[in-house]
Length: 197
Image (cartoon, rainbow, N blue to C red):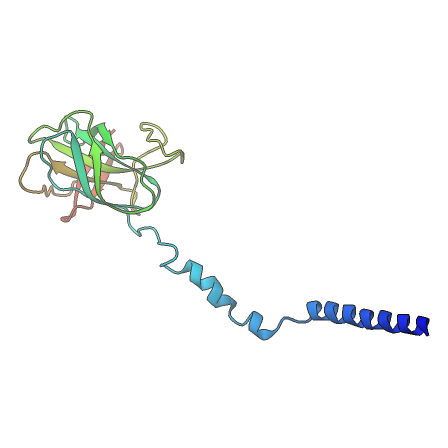
């Protein structure tokens, strides 16, 4: 009798174990995987992950003389920086006299950039986007942090005047030689300048 009870308990336990294993190995219910696309679409929605700006752009208007410049708007398609270049003797971007802090991909407004020297009334400076070429978050130019280019390969920059009451609207210039690149401006009035190396 004792042995019969023992076999009954073992049989019941065996059935429970087989039932639990069968339950865990069953074909998943339709409702468990009914909306995998819904779950996958959510994190990829524009609200969850802001997409990078589709176009690299920079907007800066005339500035008062001083030791800083404010860039009204910059759109970066890659992590990078904004550098302020003085004009060389041909009026094209020359030496860097100021650089922003590291800027991640996306839109930035009212970026203040300290200058190594005060801007002089009447001079033209150039705000230029640079990429963080080596990914270390430190501006190195000349070096890996080269100027950012648009889809046509033109450098993204905007010239502006110090101490002028009106925003500059230079007319577009074309490349003069293979060593010259056309620099695109994304100021409110599209314009360009030429950078000669």
